[in-house]
Image (cartoon, rainbow, N blue to C red; front, side, top):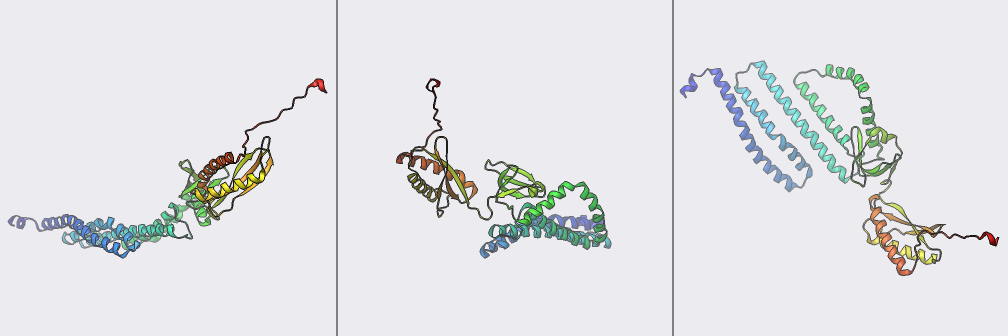
Length: 350
C-alpha cells in the first residue's frame, strides 16, 4: 500500500483504469456464458424461431459489448479531459449502434430466409435481395452513428451524389447487371430452384441470383455463371412455370407385322404401371399413345408420360423402357432393328 501511496495520483488513476479494463474481459466471458445459457433455454422452451435467431446473433456481439462497457468504465476512472471524455463516450456509443445495426441486419436476413422457405414472397430471397436488406439496415445505422458523433451527413450525401456519376460511368457493365438482377427477381419468372433452359443452350437449376451473375446448376453438378444482363435479354424456357409437373414423350418403334391395337393397350398398361411405381412419375396422369408415321423399317409411335419434376425424366424413361422391352418380349411384339429391302432388277429381264 505504501508503494501505491508513493505513486503519482494521475499514474495511479491510469493503473486503476487499466486494471478495471482487464477485469472486464473475464467477467464479460463469464456473464455471457451464464446469461446466454438461460436465454437459449428460454428460447428453446418458447418454440419461437425468432427468439432463437435473435439470441444466436446477439451472442457473437456480447464480448464486444463487454469490451465497450469496460472501456467506458475505464474512461470514467482515467484522468481524461472533459472534451476527450465526451468524445470517447460518443465513439463508444456509436460503436454500440454499429454493432446493434449488424445484429438487426442479420436477424432480419435470417427471418426473411426462414419465411422464404415457407411462403412465396413478393421478392424471392436471393443473395442480391439478402445483401440489399443488410446494406439498407447497415447504412441507416451508420448514418445514426455519424449523427451521434456530430458529423454532418449533408456534405457526405452531396459528395456521394457528385461522385455517383463518375462511379456509374466506371461501373457501367456492373450496374447493368445489377439492375438486370433486380428486374429478374421482381419479374418472378426466374426464381431460385427453377430449372431453366436458355436459347443459347445452357440449362440447369437456378441456384442464386447475385449482384452480377446468376448461378445455375446443370444435371452434371457443375456451376454455370450467366451475367444478369444476358439472362434478362435471353429467351428462357422455365420448366417450373406454371407448375413443376411436366409432360414428356418417349419414342417407340414396332414392326409392321404387329397388331397396333394390342401395341397401344400393352404400352398404355406399362406406362400406367411405371408412373405409379417409379419415383418421380405422376401416378394420376393418364398416359397416351400416338402413332405418328411409317418409318423405313417400323411403325413409329410416341408414348406421352408425365413427371413431377424436370429432373425425374431420366429415371422414369429408364424404367419405362426396361419394363416395356420386357413386356413386348413376353407379348411377342417385335421391336425391329433398322433394315431396308433392296429389289435388284436383272437388265436381261427388261
